[in-house]
Figure 1 (cartoon, chains in turn green, brown):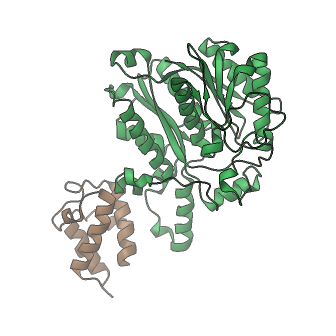
Figure 2 (cartoon, each protein chain N blue to C red):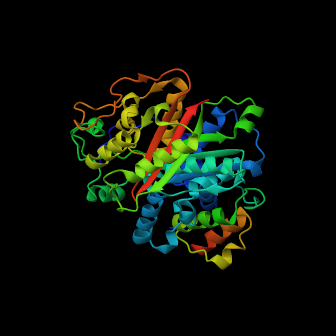
Figure 3 (cartoon, rainbow over the protein chains, first blue to last red):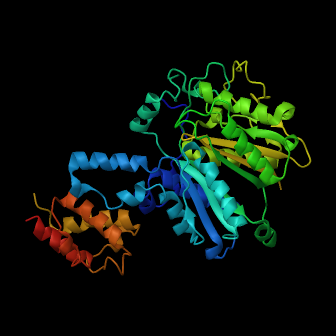
Length: 364
Length: 82
């Protein structure tokens, strides 16, 4: 395996020893992220029955699963740890967060492959709108850097084989892109009803104003070539937010750096926004982070929130030669300023299985 | 080679400390797994699995329920390996 970048520091340094022993890495990332987000939100006082947790992964605790299988084969059934199942189950991250924060309004883990993190945030918004929670800890996580999942992705011809240049391998919208680069980690946001946030004088970065979800019902891994499902998700999210295409100034693309997927999405944006796509600052942040799979939708929603809050669209690196078919303005090597006044941005997240999630973010 | 009771206590203390987050010095013979060390049944089975591995003994489930203190476990393991 080649690594494009390694993060300095180890998540285990931010957790206790018993926590790291009882949690799959995907749950460790999620819990560490949730604690950071919670502190950043000012550790709000919430009735535990009004606090929810929605944190997803795309794949679940696969490192635990594979380690458990190795233990069974090499050392026998008596050496299996009783913590194996609670570590590998895909609801483990959200369950540990619910335990840690005493979140009793519901603990959920929506699984939709690489759309999971965005769908989790969308579901958290729904919980608040339905009156089931005032505050929701929401996000996505993934830990799959292990030879088995890597070989499986390689077999499906979806990951980059640019092994001689790891840092340049994730290059969405570049003409020489050849697949995605797997990343690991988690992103968690604190969602709060407007009333609850106002009552405690919370600092609000931005609003999740619209949630749009659709399914392609077309193919288990390939996106529908015309991007019809993606268009519906974006349109639903804009309708839900009560905005029109001209309000959208920035899109954080799902763009994983695959030959086919990147352009299906770019064409879907052009088809939906028509001439209004001319003033969209399109960013493909997986060029910098790699693809966190179930964590990606949450990480990119977080980037979209920060882009709206700071009025800066993040760059897309590694684009030496933009795909000639791309006709939406791409933010390349430096951040792009976003306009003053009321603005909206869209985060797109799509997943194997034909899952499409679009979230509209508007300024606070 | 059999472990002495002191060696079993030291080894078990290490396992229990890792699992519980309590300092190894709190893992004394008189300490109760549930009342003093806050070990639940899932953690207890994890400790038993590690102890069986470390001391090369077999601790059947029906015997685990009789091990209420660290001292109980130490004497059980010391005897079982003989």
